[in-house]
Amino acid sequence: MLSMQKYFKTKSYFGVSIFFLFLLSGCGLSSTPKLDTVTMTPERLARQSMQTRFFEIDQPDTLIRAAMNVIQDQHYTIREANAQAGMIFADQTNELGAPVRLFGFPIAGGGIGSSSTGFGVSFGPFLSFGDSPDIPYVQRQIGSISVVIYPVADKKGYEMHVSVELRSFLNTGMLNEVWLIKDATIYQKFFESVSKALYLEDHP
Image 1 (tube, rainbow, N blue to C red):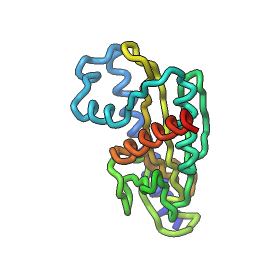
Image 2 (cartoon, helix red, strand yellow):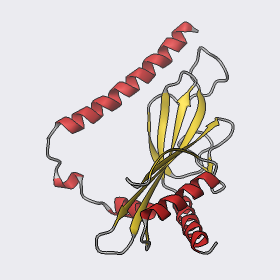
Image 3 (cartoon, rainbow, N blue to C red):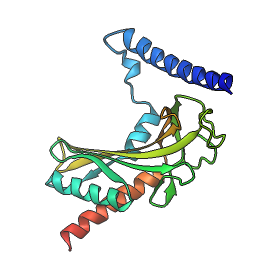
């Protein structure tokens, strides 16, 4: 049992080390990024369009308030909100048996039972061998929503950028996987709900 535990821990630490070495090597090659590294590919443009929506509104506080109402209605807990900076961060934490949801859709990563499209980074083994303290297994998942609001120079209003991600954690407390959700339906429902919240605020 001890040898198996040592194997999984070694595998996890090795995976994390390789990941951070990859990041450091990429950052250390040049202080000035190459042009092709910042080029917006069709996939990036499509993702940016999917996650961004323009709202013709005068006051950003109203837009922040509407987004917070939508997030809380979906049973997410506001972790941080800064109206002046135009940022909101919220989480929903569930045990593995209870999937994280948003607008009725399960937010899934790349593990067993995945139903949402996205891409992610694995930090350790995706395991589930039961409640054994000696073998690491995925214990809980955290769904996170990040909202950033910023003014548009040539328009009278603000753009809202939303990012939804899923993180899984092992029973040891180690981060296992991080997945950025790319389900267009979820983002569309979010923006529709914000528009509805804005309308209800103007027409109580």
